[in-house]
Image 1 (cartoon, rainbow, N blue to C red):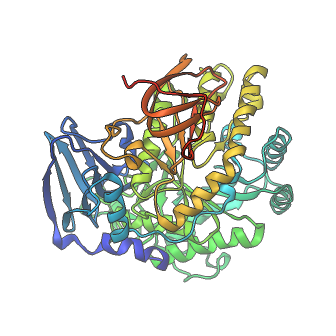
Image 2: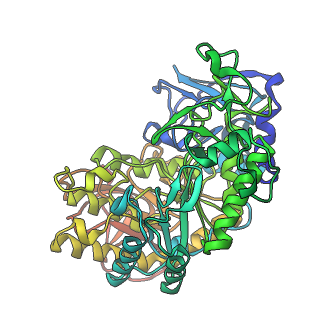
Length: 566
């Protein structure tokens, strides 16, 4: 296991002898958050919740931890992966380590989070590079899909800049490489990859490359890694193979393929490959040399580290080099490489809380039901100790939805962009100037200008989160405890003073907004006096947001209204 991962994986690999099960009864009206932000729309968990979450086998393609927080200041925690059952007003956590329940002195949701953070995942003191927050991130996936190439990448970048995108981070997605595990630019599609990266740098971009921990089983890389063939084409690590996950000889159905040294074929979304075993020192040496070589030889700035789901690294039918390894420690061994480079993004994380790395929600489909998940899932991520959360791509990451004849919806794309505009990060992949007509392009440009208006404030919130560990994007209950806001999952507060109420329903031209105590100035200039629930107009060109006002005693606010609570 590499040294970077040791701090995250130590508890995950050595606690099997201390199995523990703990059941906690909910107090009347108590609300709970945690486990995995995939369940954001199920949060808060209440006495009515009926849910099973298995963090031993899955991280649900998002971020996870064996932690639950309540708005009464209670914390349930286990160092190791766990199974969690929420049913009948009780929470049961079954883990391969002691399970504890403790109550913070500040008996609120924020108090529970701060207590857990101080004890188990203190802030690093740093945030990811400010360019992740000050400019929209660009990703080539939707426009180029499985046809990444030098010519179109440069044209994509130039087109975005020509349409007013301020250069920041550009991610080159899957298939820039010659093959899975063959991490070299495909020579047929990249005539001068170093020149391409240099040109992107001159334009003002930092360049990231998509990566995964899987190795195609009909490649020279596989033959080298599996059996040590072609030893002269590598450097910097022992010239010996055998650092891929192998079949478990005790698993049924393996037959002749269970002998030691034969890699296990494992399925993932792009096919069937061998998986790097990050409990093996040679796997870490090879992967480190691979990434360092791309930085050294081509000048790339970092990586989009995809894959490594807990389910993909399921060890029930395969074995790792370290007999104490778990799928969580293998995940950490991979994801920890994000700490080596200044520009990285990860998606599947077991714990790794409060690290100064961008994390992304799982790919969202181009559907209204997926749009309705974004806010709740980002709230859940923040409460898991992942403040630097990106809500996937504007309009979703499903490339099929953006091809001619697909059920693409311009309204959905705009509403998605409006969420991105005022949350921690905005990531654009599909070109708005290809998929939108002139009317919707104008609305998108307005949305982009809104992002740039608030970008300095958002970057400052990210810097603050790196130091104090508090979520950047919060639910109302976090800031205003005990006022009945626990179930509000369709609006959010950025820090303390920017409340955002995006439209999440198809065809909606207005929406209700819950305003907490204080005076709040809306984007249209109207000032409201909270606490209150109001109805505001929200045509497609508007994303309602409200800035908290600090009014001196005796100030004259002629336009203040006092809507009544419903």
